[in-house]
Image (cartoon, rainbow, N blue to C red; front, side, top):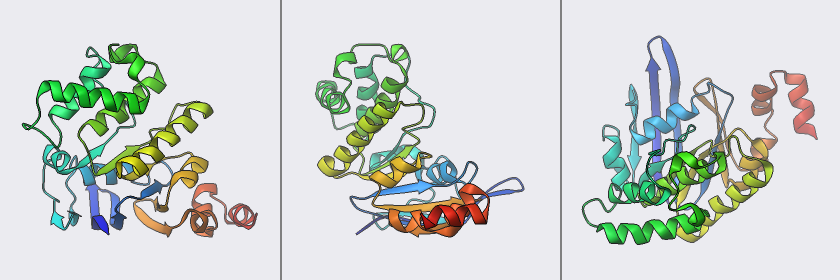
Length: 251
């Protein structure tokens, strides 16, 4: 079943068209990888889906409701959450307090007590593997800890659709493996649908059910990971040379 429809989205910044008639369906309980070179429009698309940017044309439909003009906080309370490439915690609040803020302003805004929010935050922090740091100010966390906290804060709003913007960037190989395990668990145990932007090709190929590819604001391919891996057009975009791309996909 389709959870969210991106329909013919166009987004311009002055004379630059960042998204050109982009359409993507996101299905319930899947991980959709979104890949493409730098500047291809991936984060811009996430910003349009979450309401940070309003599109110049096209529409966003969530659970059959047009949310194209809805402000970000209302989209969040409907069940759409996201992380950021550069983590954005409240530095002087503890890990626990950061997640509680998200819970109190998320899907159950005005319907949950502080004590209930605290218990839920503790459960989320344990799931993410930050329980040892729950009383630690977020500014004291290392890169891995901040990435996990960013994910915990997004989960605090109790999303049905979670958009991850390069949540693996800056992590070591072992940390990447641990984060991928957490992402799979979130999808399988919490039944959360995930849109995942990532530059690490092996990671996104390994975890995604489907992959969409953007290049210069245009969707150039969409399909299963194995289909994208053998797509000559996608390889050419990444390698910048058709002969080299052809050799790559022939392996």
